[in-house]
Amino acid sequence: MFSVARMRRETFSPLGQLFLAAGALALLAGLASLANLGWLARFQADDYCTYGRYVSLGLGGSQAYWYLHWSGRFSATFVNTLLHAISLRSPMVLAAFTLIGWTLAGTWAAARWLGQPPAGRNPLAALVLGACLPLASLSLAPNLYQVLYWQTGHLTYLLPLVGMTALVGWLAGRPHQAEWGPVDLALTFGAALLLAGFSETLGFVQTIGWGLMATYSLAVNRGSGTWKLALAGAVGSGLGLLIVALAPGNDVRQGLMQPPSPIPQVLARSVRDAYVLGASLVKYQALTLALAVAAAFGVSVSLRPEPTKTTSAGRRAWLGIFLWPVASFLLVAAVMFPSEYALSSYPDGRVLVTAAFVVISAVIVWAAGLAQIVTAIDRVQVHRRYWLPLVLLVVAVLAAWVSVGQIGRGLQLRPDMQDFATGWENRHQAIRQAVANGAERLAVASLPHLSGLAEVEIDPDTWINRCIAEAYGLRSVVPK
Image (cartoon, rainbow, N blue to C red; front, top):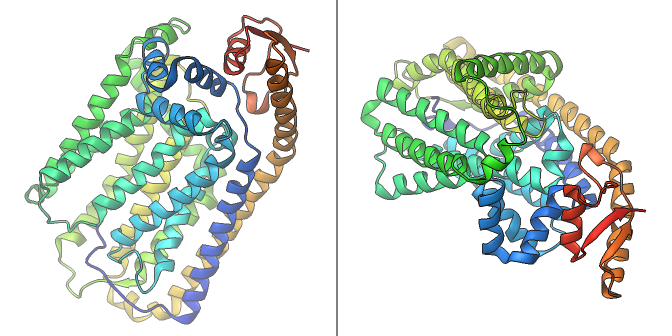
């Protein structure tokens, strides 16, 4: 809704540049600490199930099995199985690769959105926004462990957000009046289809988001042809969501749950959940939200718009100031809908990282639109050299505060993760040795239920026991 592509860059003051660098370093330090902790991640719970089926059925066979017998999330299943084919220890590097990729995608998207080349004269401006997006999103995520360090949860809910960020960057770099050709429409359709295949949550959010974008484009700027692109995205996302929803395996999962409530009731509860989440974020995560506002405002206001104040971009900025919060609230409600429909409950913590991504993205775009309006005021422009460094100082302070908070979360997780990793390695080696010696039934160590994820139970027919047994080629396992 907001476009700052027409803004031309103004040289930052040395003090402002210093504060930008401090903010970028603080954000990167927080991300690096979370990435480093990923080295202690190991297989858990559902990871054993997907690995076991890969061992017994291969890449294609396991893909078909999960679609027919458990979940239609075809993209998540494929990537998960592909990682199994590469290495049993993929969880150890997954967090680092994703956070690096997300930061690079965010920096690239910010650079294109702000009208700068990726290697522009001031890449720190784009880097601040590029690093703020993943760190602030994870700061709002209630269950950091399951979404960042558990492979199944990571691939289902976190990895596709990197793809969403890259897709937004690709779209943002085009002039607003550009015509979208068949290749553009096909790429958007394909990307939306694949991203929807990671989870029904992202598929539903994408479909609603593309639909809102098409409606806005038709109502406000029909001549740009952006509505065609949005329609291609909506169709691709809707098709991906349909493929997920029609999977025969969903009947198996739904059989373990209570029947869905009527749609009007589900919609009402989804709206209520969105309100509850928003209120809790304002109450408990105000500084993280302030970081996103300050970073987007500070970077954007550092650019000077063209002299005219009656541009269509300016009118769109004013319209977006009012419409964007409404649209983002609807998208957060869309995050809630699949869980309320399937489980009749508030979503799990790992699901809410999608809502966190929506909220932080919305805040960044909203604050950039506000900056576009503010920079059109003559008096503000005249005195900008005095107050802009203060804004960037606030960015640096808030970045340090949020980063320290995330480093603290990591330090709290580290002892339990270290103990779990040590126990997992000992058990892994013991099982491998027993299998090499011809064992078929085995008593193994039961590790802690880290972050509430399943571990070996007394009954050998429990699903987690059967998955661990299949992963190692055993007939059964029980706890020692």
